[in-house]
Amino acid sequence: KIEKKILLAFSVLYFSFAFFSSSLRIRYISPIIPPLVILSIFGVRKAIVLAGRFGSPVRRNMAYLIVTGGICTAIGMNVWYITGQFRYVRPFDYLTGKVSRDQYIERYRPEYPVIQFINKSVPPSAKVLFIFMGNRGYYCERCYVFDMVRNKSLIANVIKKTHDPKALTNILRKNGITHLLINVNILNRWATAMFARQYIKTFRLFFQRYTQVVYSKNGYFLFSLCSEAKCN
Image (cartoon, rainbow, N blue to C red; front, side):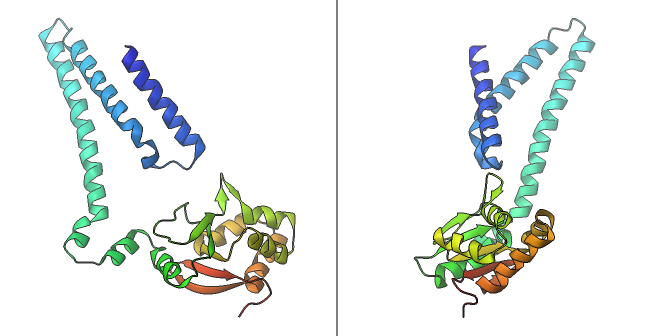
């Protein structure tokens, strides 16, 4: 009983910590999978023992059938999920050489071509601000930071404090930011929902006067940050 309580307490506390501290990802809660598997085995064993306590053979067999059905249903759901993931990932496309490594990564990470451009063309001293990238910096070989930290946006906070796009530029450069990598599709929806009309004007003026598109693909844009309007 003590072991079960320890495993259950660990699972609940770890899940709560992962849930409230960051955006929930399966990799963040993977350490609780073994304890949950052990607890599920204890549960199955308990169900089988309870089913065997029925005096009537008919009731006992019915209880065994229900337990077996529950186990088969759980296994079937897991097989269905794994099969779906396998169809989505399609690993043999890459393993058999049907697609290249870069093509395979781009299939699931649409920002990958822009990341490649950053690695090849952006100076090593650069610092890139990732905006609406889902807190993903996979494969990026340059220094980068995220705009959204704990559901708070650096750019949004600055724009709400000042109507001056130049001030936003100065703050970004003060933090060492030289480039912006943006998921533009999400940015447009977010800006419309987040800002009043006067803030949207400031937001647009910032991009028009103090940034320049360097590269774009699949809805992801790389901007260089200018100190003066407008850089060449």
